[in-house]
Image (cartoon, rainbow, N blue to C red; front, side):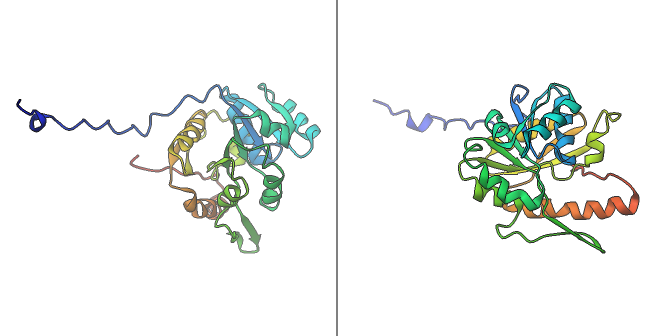
Length: 238
């Protein structure tokens, strides 16, 4: 019997996945914890305007209901725990001062959820904004440590709350840096960012790289003050 082993070809490699082949997230419910603040409210408005189902969360349910009614677009309001439980993707947009305490209280409600942390640990003095040290390395890494049963990513740090809330602006011309440990999760967040006209989600590394992304907001604040602008970011050649 003649062996055919020498003529057999090695199995063909699967083609590399197109990094811009992103999943459909239009049917997912997005919760925004801190949705009554400027940044959270702006994100809730833009996502709802793009057709996403959005729930605003707040420590006080009545504040969330009021903010939701003001936004319209089918946005609902709830206390933080209910918002977390009812959502598929949960954006953390609370003030840095309450970040750890909020997440500790919601650990069970956020279990199994895709969490997107967009909190920037910043301080302010007479010289302007500056990055604060975080024991875990960054706000996103703190979230991952506090939420061991959640899938934590980081994104939406560099967006102007003024532009997000301006109803006269149809497109937000900026890229969103997305960080996380799982490609499947970062793909979902990139796709969510791309729901907003003019916006694009760009993978920017693992959570260990979140510190410099969060800190860069201090530089953008300085830019905005000097040039009286609402600066964002664009990544070239991708």
